[in-house]
Image 1 (cartoon, helix red, strand yellow):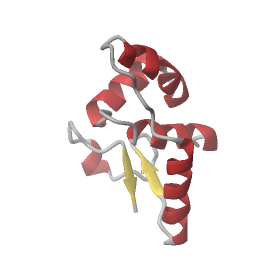
Image 2 (cartoon, rainbow, N blue to C red; image 1 turned 120 degrees about the vertical axis):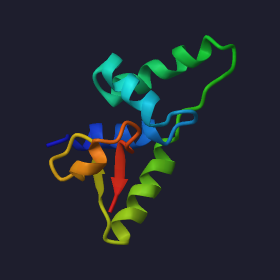
Image 3 (cartoon, rainbow, N blue to C red; image 1 turned 45 degrees about the vertical axis):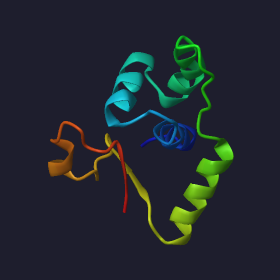
Image 4 (spheres, one colour; image 1 turned 120 degrees about the horizontal axis):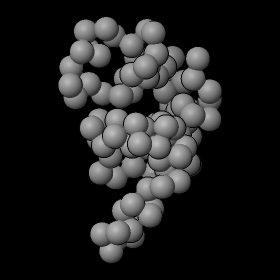
Length: 98
C-alpha cells in the first residue's frame, strides 16, 4: 500500500506545470519516488533559465478534501485496483479519480 505522504507527493507532482503522464513516469523512474522528484524539479526546470513553481501543498490539500467530500478516491497507476485495460495504454493517466 502506498504511504499517505507519497500519495500526496504523487498528486502534487502530477498537478505541477508541464508534468503529464509521460514526464511523470520518467521522473518516478529516475528519482524513485514522487517526493524525490519534487525536490529535484526546481533544479531541473531551472536549467531552462525560467523559475519553476511546483503545485502548492495548499492547492493539493484542497483538491484532496474536495475529492473526499464527494465520496471519491484516487487510484494510482501501480495500485491493484487500477483498471487493468487502462493500464495497458501507453499514455494512461497515472492517477484516476473515481
